[in-house]
Image (cartoon, rainbow, N blue to C red; front, side, top):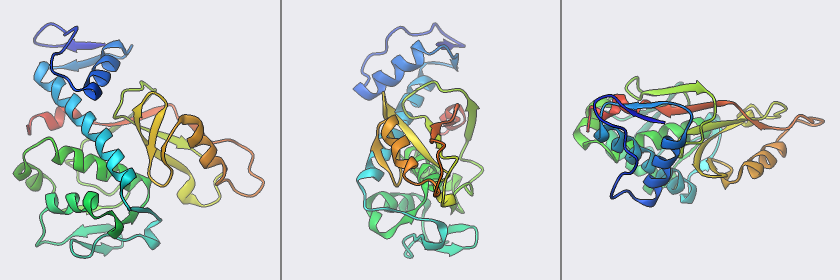
Length: 239
């Protein structure tokens, strides 16, 4: 349910794209309360979620590979490898470096947590002014859960199926720790993007992870009852 603090909650919004309309309907029909200061803040969230979906698809179509940190790579023209992740060179702008990941995918390989962080950075870059982005995210370190404090990401219990959310498919009988599970963007009804697996249905994601169990492992992968998303209200002030 959508709740406005300073005005009446909208039944409809004009001039939405089909993707934004789907997100808006999902928020409106959800049993969870989604609170906004005004329509402008709501529209900003719709825009960011739309970009998360679009950038997940861009990553799926790119030549970026899946790998553990040991075998990973980031374009050395922009990034330096450290024990904690990839640090952006001081001479480079964060905006240019993030764009490079989505236009020059063959120069990159990383695992699924990093893919979500990169999709978030790109989606924020697409929706706030570039100078703000460069001030917020400089210096920049990227790998797994090592990301800037100004990337406002939170995890909640529950599955609300709002397009642009991130869900986690857990693989309890994994063989390689890198396949303990898959962080995935919820694209639309029964479609998810997980880096290293691709654009797949719920059942296809489970089947893919079940092929990566340890020898003799019998416990199936499953979708955890949790959701990760950006704190859109924190980002709204930079629009």
